[in-house]
Every structure is written in C-alpha cells, then in structure tokens.
Amino acid sequence: MGRYSRLREIRRMDPARDCAEILRLMSQYEFPWDYRQGISVAFLRDYGVPRISVLLDRTQEFERNGQKRYDDTVLFGYEMAADGFGSERARAAARHLNRIHGRYRIPNEDYLYVLATTVVGPKRWIDRFGWRALCPQEAQALAEVGKRMGAMMGIEGVPDTYAGFEELLDSYEQSMFAYDPANRRVANATFRVMASWYPAPLRPLVARFSLALLDEPLLEALGFEQQPRWARSLAERLVRARSRAVGLMPARPRWLPSRPRPRSYPFGYRLDDLGPHWARSRPLEPLPQERC
Image (cartoon, rainbow, N blue to C red; front, side, top):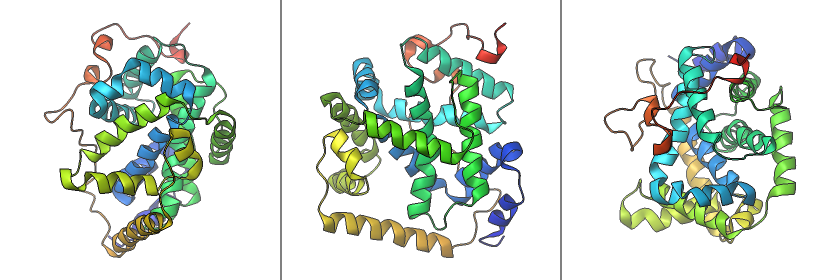
C-alpha cells in the first residue's frame, strides 16, 4: 500500500456517514502516535480551568490512580467508536460514562469544552507535527465524532463543524484559563504518569521535553514557567524529524492496527472495569435520547 493510499481513500468518504471509519483510519493507521499526543495535550488543557481541576483534585483519582484514570479516558473513547456510534457497545459505554459524571455537578459549558479539546487537540497536534496535515474530510470527521459523543452524553449546544469546535475552545480558554494550585497538582500527577512510561534516567528529560511543546497560555494556567528557547527549538526539531521519518516509511498494513494497550489492564478489561470503583456493577442510566 502506498504512503498516500489511505488519504485518497479518506477523501472519497463522507465525513457525516463514515466518521467512525475515518477516525479508525486516522488513529490506528495514519497517525497513531500523533493522535495519542493530541489527546494527551487535550487532557492537560482541561487542567488549565480551575473549575475543572479543583473537581479532579478533590476526587484524588489522578493522584491515587493516575495511570488507570488516563487509560480509562482513552478506552471510553475507543469503546464508543469501535463498532460505530449507533452500536450497543457505544451506547453502553456512554451510559456508563454518564453514570460516573452524574455524581458531580458539572456545568454544560465545561462538558462542551472538554469535548472540544478532544476534537481540536488531535488536529492541532497533527497539523503541527504530523507527517502530513489533516485533510478537510478528516477534520470534519473529528467534528462529527464530537457531535455524536455529545449527543450520547446529553451535552447541549455541540457545534456542527470543526471551526465551531475550535472557536468554542479558544473563547472558553480566553475567559476561563487561570492559575490555581489545583491545576498544578493535577498536571503534576499526569506528568508523573507520562514520565513513568520511560526509563527512570530519562524521566526528567521527558518532563522538560513535554513542557517545551506546550503553549504559553497553558503553561501559565498550569503554573509552569515557559521553557528556554533552546529547549523549545530542540523539542520541536526532534518531533518534526520523527514525522519526516514516518512520512518516508511504508503505510501501516491493514493487519497491524495500532489499538490502545492500556497499562492498567494487561490481561484485558470489561466496560465495568472503567471508572472509579464505586461505579461498578450498578444499573446503567438510559441515554438522553432513550428517555421517555
């Protein structure tokens, strides 16, 4: 398969009809590493909002079970998209996620923002560091995925287009980004999880490398100083060198998709395993569209 064969295939697809398949091709074949980095940055952006980070800090989920919390978030997205958004698997994942969130008083605008980070984060990372930029069909497919996840979760006012998600994210951050000690505590817990994926001698370098790739408003909201220019330049050059190398490699074969390999579940997982311990084995709430 040629390096651009999947891009030609995606360009022939309808983002509204084929959004789950386009997402699968993007996240499992075209940009598996870059997509995960974009989602990781999306997690960090949530912590720049005190109203969100204070709640996360109060639950202590990241402090006590940071790797599991990270894995669960990734797996919820995977479960909702794996068999298509109209599948029973997707509906079960959405019901389980809604039950977990239903324990807390979370404003609709915060749900909208977190959803927007999962749409905008991957595209911005891939356009900046991927081996190629996303095509219009891929960008709109991300927006369609966001719309469908929002509908299943009962979120109101979800944008119809990628541009709408981007505008929502930027305006929300402009008004809501602010430093709070909880921001830094939750971010530190997440950085510890990410650094733990590497050998101990490399972890300080990984932390500096990660900070060097973040934008100044986010760093300020998290309570971190901007890294020196040389560190930012080096980090960007290294990531772009990787992307150039990936662009010269053959396309990933169809028999070798890159699927989530959660460290918290080395022997596999059930949907009931995802989330806090108190959310297990309880009746699932119906989705908004399933209620009478």
